[in-house]
Image (cartoon, rainbow, N blue to C red):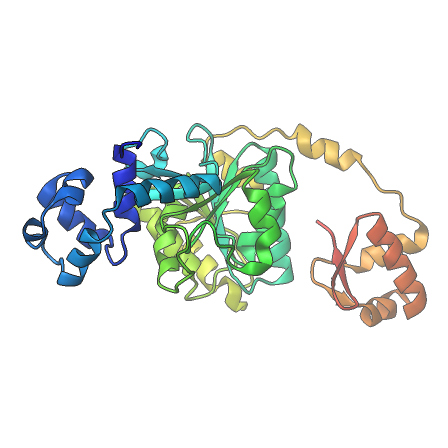
Length: 367
């Protein structure tokens, strides 16, 4: 039978039910290593501060080496990898942060410590413009070789990650508040699968852990810790994104925020961050300058040269649109072309990929 190695003992301790950070540290502080905890007697275990009779029962009854090795092998067969603090695969950016995760489970890969990484976070109930901005930023970061980390959540998170996935070679990483074998939210299953091939799904929680509410605030320190800077898009007054930014400040990360209308509640938190010293972002160059990176303007120049030829009536309709979605009736009224004719033109503009339908009969410019 294969003998247990150190990584298997760490895996065992990471998966023990009811043993969180405080109890784990208490046990390690008393006994010094995972192996010692595994082999300790009931009497010795009882000396650890905060360890209950229930905890001792759990430790003593989860010491089946055959089952541990079998579970570890099954985990690997599902494409799930494991690392821990001190292991050579553990992300270097996380090593020195306060309350660094004891261990990580991941599918795909971990961020490259030698390449810049930016966390993009923001409103779950993002506006259309906020979603478009997040997607655009995700694409631009990827185009410039910057890794993107977020949480796969609806709104800004998933839009930024979708943008990154649109670029060949784009790398994005999702930090989960559940096991990496669970896609949460379920509607982002396509991105969940794609990210495993173009980055990685990461969690400090063992496989099978459901998306409990208390898990999500804890993952913010990992999202921040994996990044060189944090970009906030549309954060309300009490947005969870502000917690990530606050943690990032404590970790010494660059904080960026996109400004917005002072009367728009979605920007209360973002504007406050800027007042308190966050870098105001209106262009990808603002982020790259702060990260000490060179911006290759030839990329943008090439895009501008790819002009779409529009007919006269197409130009009229196109000129009437903005980033804010407008209803077909409103567009027809502005252009004076009639609803039927306007719809035909909009369909043509969609095919030319300069306009996007942003809802039932609502249209906006494609960024």
